Picture 1 (cartoon, rainbow, N blue to C red):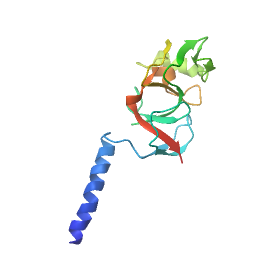
Picture 2: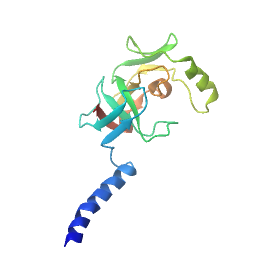
Picture 3: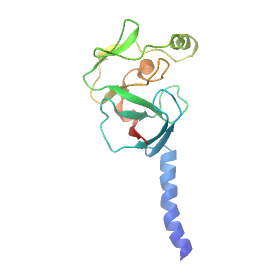
Picture 4: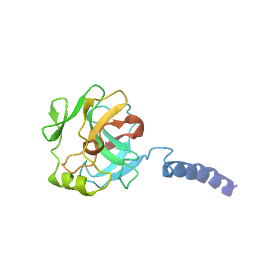
Length: 156
């Protein structure tokens, strides 16, 4: 009877872990080690859709080795996201100035380029940035569809 009860507890836990592992469900906790957003533990939030100022975890970011990439939402539907005067702007707010190393990386890393477009963010898109000039986010790959986000996360 104990084995059956233990199996009844372990089987759902194993299925849940597999769902997280294979990307079928968002991770409930993320540990961020990158200085582009505050370091430490981040917990999944039920808040949706993401709003300006929220932190989100992107999944499948191009050229990114981890299953998530944490960014602060700076642009939302209707915002004008542009490359102008050597930097990115959202409406009239300047985003972090790119570090000169970012331009060097653009020349040397195949497939990596700085996004230099200009357009209004559409419904179901955000622009996500980190705190520094080498932060990998919308500065490199432009607007992000919200269906490529794991969700909104809160710092713990």
